[in-house]
Image 1 (cartoon, rainbow, N blue to C red):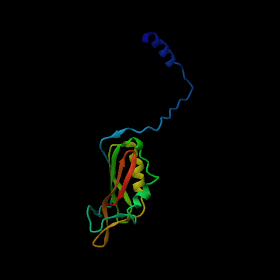
Image 2: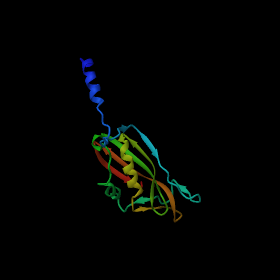
Image 3: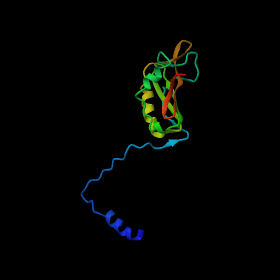
Image 4: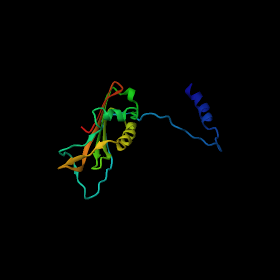
Length: 161
């Protein structure tokens, strides 16, 4: 029976579309979740400046524990969020001595790949970082942002801890 349908399918598939413009707009579909993935980004510093991992006064974000949550709430677009049973996104953030952030890496566990560009843009535009300091002088320090997901919902967001 399939052999009888094959010529009909071939004929239908060979219709001429000469002169017609064909445009396919693919639907916005998440790329699929990954067990664990790390993506690195460049955060250049002038050659004469140092980068610290730990300093006497680490960078902080906002003036309360809920500052990061308040910033991301309503702006964070995690692709396929309702389908994620549990997952975590952790971003390493370079907080420059003037308080501006730059995303150095994003590590995700059980989260869709498509979520990273939105998160990177949000982190790179975060206001209200207080730079870290060493001996009273502002310095470039690595900090982080962590987003925890359970049962299809963001349950915790921390920055600067």
